[in-house]
Length: 227
Image 1 (cartoon, rainbow, N blue to C red):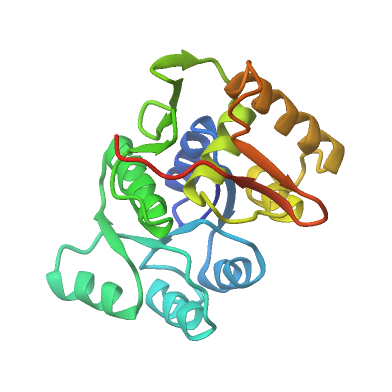
Image 2 (cartoon, rainbow, N blue to C red):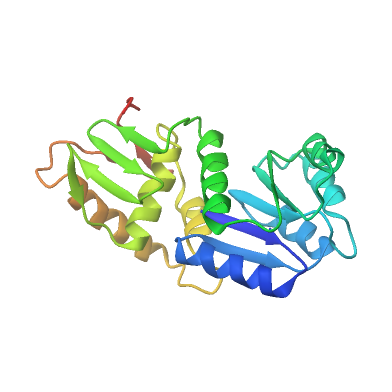
């Protein structure tokens, strides 16, 4: 998942970036509104975290311009302002949720995960497709109730595909949403990753959970189920 954070307080920005990357997110960061606006317009994001009190361009205006340009990714606003009017203004501008500073990292992560899930049409923390269940909170995956050990990138790949179960996801889209800008983006790396994940999720080769559509990409072919 690719996340953008726009925050002018360097210690807080660096802290959030570190914590998000430790959770497996690909993270872009900006210290002012204009840079953040550009990144949000040019990068394929899964969500953005935006401080309202930004230099150069206020967070509210950044959000308004994104929405006017048709950018639909979920937005979580950060604010040091306690007035309810400021929260309402942020939501009316197009934000999806807010968090008042100071905040606990656990709450930030929980709200972010919830926003991303809702974008994919999921209402619960556990994503389930057929016998495969993925807990977005604990980052554990089970197959017919038995835990499956995945690497960080295998988990990130499966989470992205399951959030969009039934949709065809191109190699380019997967690469852009899974990897940092400075990481290896060779398509062969992604193919190897998909192959490893398939073997772990389908050891008997009877399930075929990840479908390859030649020239188009990959798709979770299992139907969503209720956990």
